[in-house]
Length: 424
Length: 192
Figure (tube, rainbow over the protein chains, first blue to last red):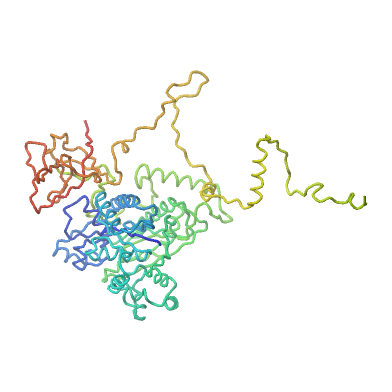
């Protein structure tokens, strides 16, 4: 029988901040998105105040003053480092690991014996001891059940952070499943939940006991698979290799609203450069590029405008210069003066491996090779001398539009100049 | 004797139909049996299964990059350098100073309460969170929400953090007060 564990960091970003700043322990803390815009992580104390994921900062300012909520800018360098540490500690516990996101991974525990709860506790203590990150462990015979178990471990203190559904009798399992809303099941979003409700399926147990054929007919084969997974029939295998991304997105909200085309040009150039760098890192080329700009939906008093354009590329490429050229042309088409733009972004699409690239009839192969060498050199210099040592001039030098990171913690673990201070 | 036992085709005689050119091989008499047996086995199992790891290797278009220690002198047909036998990799401080990579952090010291232990203001500490704090070890603990470095004392029911300087008082922990040890200091880095 298959056995999966899902290990996942509790309020991961907030926990990362607390490792080096113990003062934040027990206090309400939010981490805000890139532009200091919206809550992307909330401590338990903040969740208890009813702040939802994605709430814009200016909407919770009053609440923050009232309850002393501490707002931090996101420090992805720190989170990525602690995530890597956490994942390598977890790798010690199973030969098969799938890193599912920055703060969660699946481990395969087939044939690991009977006391999986005990094993889960060891995992939990080791990760906390070694990295400072508190985690919860959910164990089940399919990935969907492991996810559900993790939800139980996290929400119900009597489980002490580890829930092994395999340790329950059938009647205990059913009682537990009857007490959880079907919307908590992995893959059941709001829309599916509404449709299920119409079929009188409200709890996890209802879904487990539903007629699989009927579910397939009225919803989809994907939801049918979820039903099978809830019954303990593993349909989703561990994906040990992260598949190359099919799209690469790079977008940021501006520090302050932007009105001028020149500022937008700088921003999209910068985003396109960053996206192209990621594209080259995964050895792919893009067949099309999408550019979009929009005003802030949160500023209801402002006139609203939002537009995007996809530009197909004659030859798939990963050359920053070509991508930037396409994106600036696209921006010119969609830009309208007079709006206060809050966000701009670039998305690379139709990705394919660079090795299987097919050139158009008119491609100049010599020039391609030259551009590939130039890009390689640029990436090398930027890796050695730091991000943006070399950049496309239209990305601008002053970057008024750039995000504010008013309250970002130091890069404690990756920058020798920013080490955490220990009193003595 | 009848005519029909003579002449005509004899089964198995004549030139064998060959699908490919052949070669004659000399094999030692003692190995003949082995070679014949091998050929038979090959014939009886026409599908040769390639192990999956072999296929993976076969797919690589470029040979992997190999790091080879550089010989700093040119090769001469004369007296060989006696040092060649002693090529070793370089010393890697990460390997020497860090036992648990995932659990090791660097912290910078501010203050003077540990001068007696050789820890001065501005030094960097290597702190290993995987090491179990034991009586007498220098630890990083959480005191009033701050990371603090002191010597850990745990004897006869007394738990305290001891300073290594006469100017600083020890920090004692009473029943019910929780002391959180963040990690154990394993090395001190000093500029001289």
